[in-house]
Image (tube, rainbow, N blue to C red; front, side, top):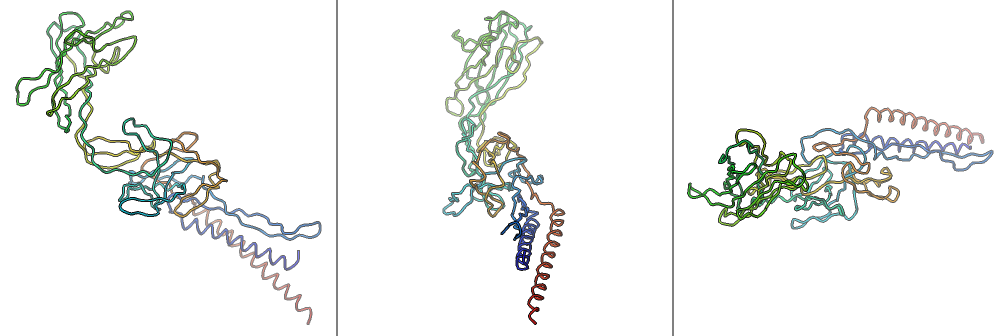
Length: 435
């Protein structure tokens, strides 16, 4: 290797160590950046010309990503913040313009580990870099997510309309040893179309036959007037341990079977009544439970009627109160009437080689052919990580380790400068031979 080649090799060493110092500087500068992934440096021998008696070489510094290396997760006072523990990224969309309350997004698919999301003025869940979280929309009727497409999650802060009661569920025990004519009663509260509450009485009377009770469903009149009868039913209980086919049944006032306590084909005994609540006729199912279950109405031992619980669906109108995330990725909107609705679900996007993703500003990444095909999965599925709500992932930078690497890079850079000055002195001596 000639002196000129030595000079070029030393310069390549200076450039390589300069690249290493630049990566260390970037890491130290972003040591407090949420979701930041540090850059390491890999040195590679460069052979320019080689042979049995001639050799020209140098060094090249390559930047190595650590996108798959976990950062420290810490809890924060933000119910919308999320941190992935393990493999995967959040899918995000980058806003590019906003007009008349509508936002347009960059068409590129982007991914991040920066989960410091908050709701912006337009209802989008946006992290500190300005990127909007994407997820699966949830069908409000079924509660199931649409896993076929990702879209920006936007929270509707409109109020929740009232929901009339459609079902009342009763859990109680009727004493098997009660005398004929023994009574027990429960009052449920049901919502009408406007969200107002109305009482509904469920009165039990022991019949003359064993295992038989009469259930009268009435609506008390406002002001203490005559109650309106909505339906009278005969409830015959089967005997536990009886041969298959011996069932309990529920008869309406005309003697028609409208419900069964069936040990062979268990199904809840549902009674349907229609009453005028709030000026409108309203159909309500009364759920008495099923055979062999203690969650509904039973006939066991005891001296008196025992109410376990009575519940109903429906509710009054509610105003938007808050939005939160859950560990399974569900985004839940809460209302001031105690109701809540799941409006979206956050999945995790993984790649075969996440370190090959294209690095963008704002702790974001773009897909590349080298990274492989993206796989969108539910939280914890297909080897992806789990989710921690109310937490963020910090940078995977160790300041002590970075300063240790900085010392080594600085010394190596200085050593290469010595080689340059030495080669320069030798070349000067060669020039001085002419004197």
